[in-house]
Image 1 (cartoon, rainbow, N blue to C red):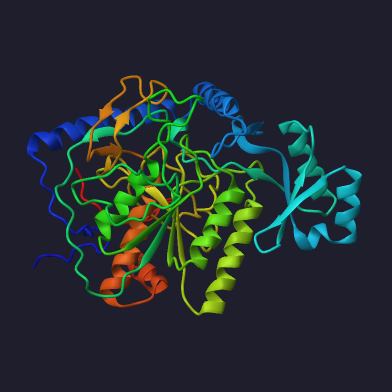
Image 2 (cartoon, rainbow, N blue to C red):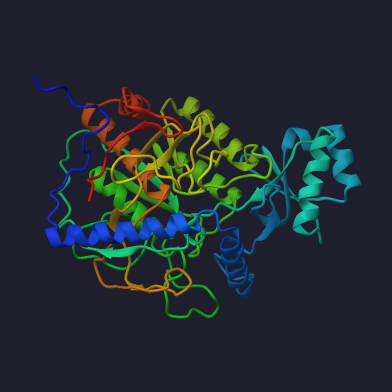
Length: 450
């Protein structure tokens, strides 16, 4: 008798892959080279710091410009660097309004800038403080009973991986929506989506409105090349549509074209998306904190989302990339208990060494050589030593946990629609009975292997 298939290894995509055998072989070679470059740079802190310096220079040149965040870095005690918003601290409002909070805010000459996230979080400015001084201030306040946090920068990780997407053949026309079941709204919180028209049917129903990825903003003036994270949100959106073609995909642009945005901006978008009806949030981004504690704005956003769930009596599932740091430190928001953190597997369904992992990871899926929709333009030498030019209706191969999370988000939407259940139950069904991989959660195959 044939043994039953492992429930974790069955495809969830709903289209016919029309690639030729030569196309598949070319993709396998690309994946081999791409993963080799990720692994070779994994522990090269000198290269990471150099790339961070390049990013800071690009952003400083556009300081004050629209949709570009200037950022600073704080040395991490473990040898790396953490990007942060300059001269800014975050404190919960109830703590800031306490007698101890008011006393210490005044003693350290901090100025309240605004109250955000329903008034639950206070932004404070420490004028003139260096990044190191700001980190010291946060530690000093916390040691005195006033929990203070830096406003961390939430990167997509494109630059730190040191590689961009590579061209690939597309799978053919999009499968027409079935119209069966109730559509599930999936919010992609990312770099936005390209306004470039496609003629192959993919992503044509995604509303562009004010969340367009400008593709070429940095450095100022634009140089005619794709910025370092250009097309990231378009790629992620295409992953969602491959798995759940009937999903109502909505895109929120919170990261700039180099893949940089503050945790406050991400947190605000999370709450806005839920207020506007999103049932599943996909966050293909993440950051590590100096003390491995949860970032304040993201923690408050999740609290607000749960309150909105209760008030509206509807469910919300949050899915996030586990990160590409190659160790077991928590990467946020994926490490929150009520977020589904997704790590990466290789094409052979083995753990990917470059993926973040740990007991906080819920599941993992193939993150090497993921194919999806991309944008038209030419890469920068900063992201690829052999820059590619992508034409209309382009598809690309890329690797990273950024492209694992949307597979899980979309599969959750697919199950909710096809089986007529809520999104929390759909996520539970998706992750139940999977083969466990230590540090990588339950392993699941969703998109087709190359």
